[in-house]
Length: 346
Image (cartoon, rainbow, N blue to C red; front, side, top):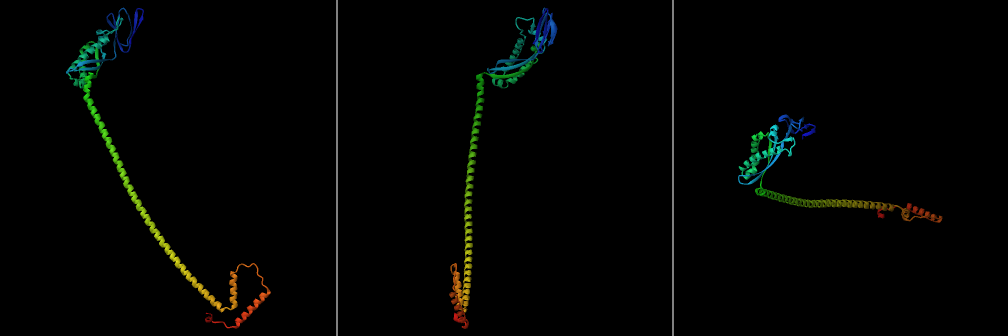
């Protein structure tokens, strides 16, 4: 933004980077450009400042279609002052001397631009039906605006150039737009319902598949359990049969062992009896050959072996003398008598 400082008899102008200044001194151009700084005399000088940057102009128009329907067109026009000197000569951009009202040059330019754009939009929309205006209208309007505003002679005369154009929206009235949206909304709702039903059907199908899988799993488990029970029964029977066979074999072995032991014991008993009988026979034969004194001595030995323990025994001379006398007499008789033969002993 430019600044004007006051000094006695002179003024000092300091321009900004976005303002193009035109200094007229007694009607002759003295200074022009952006960012100028100079002294001037207030009695003979006049200053105009034209914007040097791009400017955005939003526009909204109501237009009538070929089928008598009202539509709203929303535009955005970007323009700049391509010839600031010419623009300052056609519109009011004066900043010095100060006037009672602010300069109206910018508003005048936007009015001219708005009128030209409105005429183009009205003419374009008038040749379209409502449906065409809503569907193909934005592209057609933008093309018409480019053809009508870019390089326009009227704008060139005032030093204005259009930089860019945008058609932001073309919309019908609320009730009409709602009515036109109803079929599409119904179609979308039908598609949404179909998607919901399909999703539900898919969920039911998946649930059925899951239940079938669970049932198949249960059946498979039951079949395997049946096989397990059958196998366990077969194993139990086999174990019982093996145990019975092992018990039978053990019983047979025990019986054979007892039989062998019994036979061995019987043989042992027979052999022992025979040996005992032979010993007794030999003893009897020996006893038959021995004398009475020998038999008595043997009897005394047997008796002594079977008697309980005797602490002390007293033998008197009388007893010993009588016993010795009897033993000597018996021995003498035995030696004088002939020995009996074995047939007499028997």
